[in-house]
Length: 326
Image (cartoon, rainbow, N blue to C red; front, side):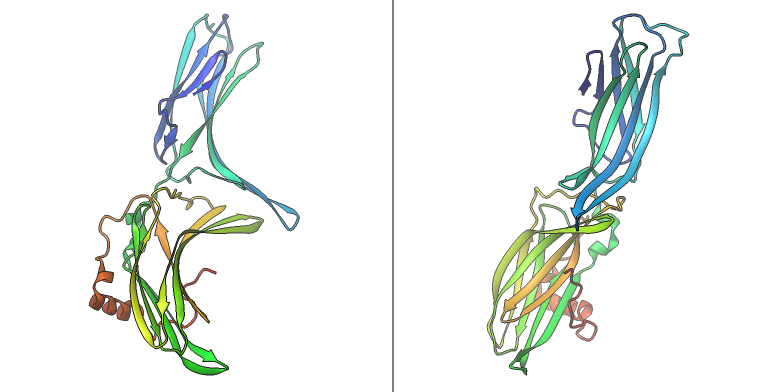
C-alpha cells in the first residue's frame, strides 16, 4: 500500500507477488477536501531491466522494457464536480504470460512497478508508486530433455618424463538432469586408474553462472554445493554413488524472456592428483519437479553398466572435456 495525504494505492494481494498471466487487482482511494473539477486518475504498470557496471574504464549499460501499460480509471473534463468525499477507483490488469522474474543484484535489477497518478486543478499532482514481484516458475515437465540421463567420460594417458605410464579414466553419470531445490542429485562416479600414480581425491560441485550482456559481457560463477570424496590408488578401479543435496533456500528464477541476463547450472566432477581430469554436464534447476523421474538406475550396477554402454560409448565420446563450461 502506498499512502499520500489525500490518496492510497492498494493491491488486493497483500504480498504483491504475482505470476505471469495472473491478474492484478486493487484500488486507488482519493479523498477530496474541497469540491473539484477536471480530475483524472490513471495507473501505469511498468517492468524493465536496468544494469550497469564498469569494464576497462568504460561504463556498460543494459536496458530492456518488458511491460508498459496505462489505464485511465477516471477522467472528468469539467462537466461534473466532485464534492468533498472519499472516492474509490478499482482496477484490474492482466499480466503478460511472457515476462521474466523480479531480480536484484549489485549490477542492477529487473523491477516491476505500478504508478498511480491523480491530476488536480491548482494543486500538485498526487503520484504513488508501488513495486510488485513477479515469480516466473520453471516447470521441468515442459522440458522433455530433463528426463534423459547424462553421462560424461574423460580418458587420458598418464605421462611421466614424456613416457606413457598407463591411463586414468573418469566417468560420471546422472539418471536425469532436471531438479528442484531440496532434491538430491544422484551422481555415480567411476574412476579407473591404470596408471602408476594415485588419484588423491574427487571433487563434485554444482556451479551457478550468471551472464550479463550489455555492450560487454560480464560473468560471475559460484559453487552452490561442493563435496570431496576419496580418489583411487594406482592400478585400482573404484565406483562411488554421491548424493548432492540442493539447498532448499536456493532461489530459482526464470530468465528465458530476458536477453540481458542468462543463468546456467553445471555439475562438475574433477579427479585430482599429479594431473587433473574433469568432466561436466549442464543440469536444469526449476521450481516444479518432474512428475515421474528416471528409475534409480545408479543403484543397480548392471543397469548402470548398460546405461554407460548406451550413453557413453567409448567410440563416440571425445577425449577432451565433454561438455565442459570453463
